Length: 324
Ligand SMILES: Cc1cc2nc3c(=O)[nH]c(=O)nc-3n(C[C@H](O)[C@H](O)[C@H](O)COP(=O)(O)OP(=O)(O)OC[C@H]3O[C@@H](n4cnc5c(N)ncnc54)[C@H](O)[C@@H]3O)c2cc1C
Image (cartoon, rainbow, N blue to C red; front, side):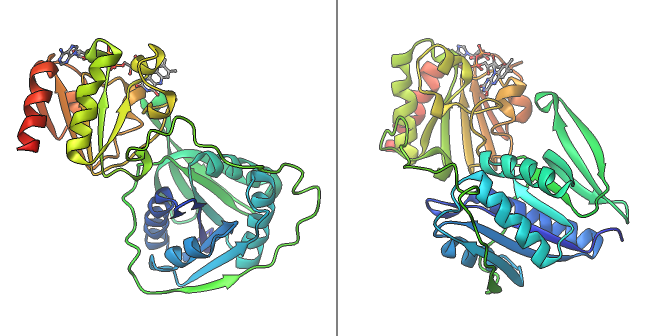
């Protein structure tokens, strides 16, 4: 076997461990199982104790933790991760493909002179190397790449490609790793966070249910019926790019290749055709319900359940039924 130890990296967010990291844990467990390689976790961040505890409860016997208030940007995070890779002796590093994860994977690859694969949707081994399936051309095709690596192979995963690992598997050990940071490492500082377009409703990334509207809504004010359905279901509102480009909804609600990737339990696509660039952002949802008046709309190929009908009839009837 050409690799002996896998390190899966958990990302600490404002609500503890980010959900995409639990998907990375599942992928890492699968690769460890297929290869017989050892598996450990790592969490690098500021106020990252909680995230490390959650990682340690996902069936990982060891989680390396580098916790420092300055670990908020890619530069120091990459340095700390490189030290953890060395400390742990890992030769495969798996990260969730969040904005930070993708950037850190590339930086770590450059720092360690290691092979890097991004947008990975499948992992396997040929007995010696890691074989990564990469999603390319906006999700239209997949390519298999072999990562030969010394000192390491770095992999960032496409969100929504694996199920989330359960975090009730007992408590592994959290091992602190000291990292010395200098002025050069921290030359980029985060002065504060501002959430754009906060609506006070359920946040997309936290939502179990997402109700998404597309160009079939015809105009901005018709999104009221989407909002009402989302409220009745306790879910969040999302949109296709056509709608965002038209200025009907804010960009932070956009799902897809150039928007957000989400993996809720239920995704309801209303008046959305199902373009590949939209689908890549929601196809990991557990159940997809499509409502469209065109029976040949591509979205129905992806849907677990479909309703062929006029959304202006179907949605108010559905909302009224839920409210009664
Ligand atoms: C580089 C690139 C990146 C992109 N990134 C994204 C992205 O991140 N996210 C994204 O969403 N798109 C993205 N797109 C755009 C994408 O290709 C589609 O154009 C877009 O998703 C279409 O949005 P839509 O489904 O709302 O509109 P349309 O394709 O116009 O579909 C509207 C649907 O509504 C249905 N409909 C109309 N009236 C009714 C009615 N009364 N009742 C029921 N159904 C009705 C129609 O049958 C149709 O299927 C990208 C494109 C490119 C080239």
